[in-house]
Length: 349
Image (cartoon, rainbow, N blue to C red; front, side):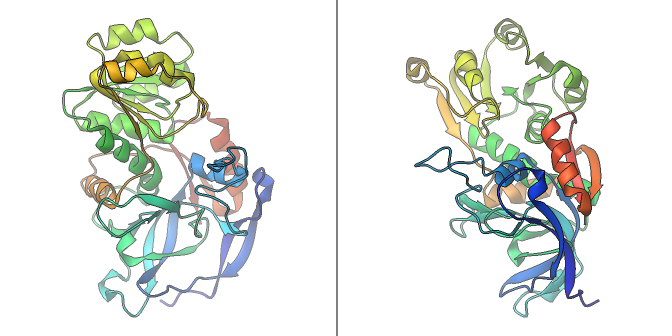
């Protein structure tokens, strides 16, 4: 079936609140050399969508400057990094066997083609994403998930949240039998960290708000600590030998306060700053105890391929909190910002 010539999409018209999102008719994009056109069946929301819309990422020379994920972005921009769908068309130089396949798109734009390349851009910020009926992507970034028993909604939750989580786990070198501390455990990345760390055979100590503790425990956490309380005493009880790897999306004061709970040679991996992007560290704790502080942004191509293997095996079961039609994208982003849910919010174009 030939794709239509126009489609519905949501344009980010400028930085601002949800009101800057416009539901519009636009031309269906044409796949360029080496690309495929994906008909979007589900696109998941992320905090990245909120912060890109708000321009909240700052720049190295000005942390308060309005910015997309990696710098100034072109408007209008179609948001949406997390796409599941089916290949609807392809460039002449692409393997025709991909046509009609059910795929998950790796949204990262890398600094090279190697297996360990670093992400330096993101679909939905540095190029148009999946808040639309169709989106283009390089063919080798469309991973075949036809055989996966997961639903399209579940597949759409994987790229950013689970990709970020798996990148953190891999960069932190989490091994079976180790103890992992997961902060922000009820959020998209946090819940993914709980599931992936548990699947790896780690002992998982999670930090969450009390009302969401049962959901975090159901995802696989062995112990859930109330983030509103002093974490020190219960953390010493939950991990009497200390933490091997902290998987942190909160940072801020939490990093400084809880860093001493790492064991000798422990690793603290940071992939977010929900608690604030400034902190004060006692550097003596870092070098006297051979600790490692690791920054982690998303995933590498190798990490994403590993994630897709887990998806094909249904080794993880992503939680979908709510679904919205594309026309209600602004409402869905408000729901995401309210943080009253557990799991992921998904749009249906």
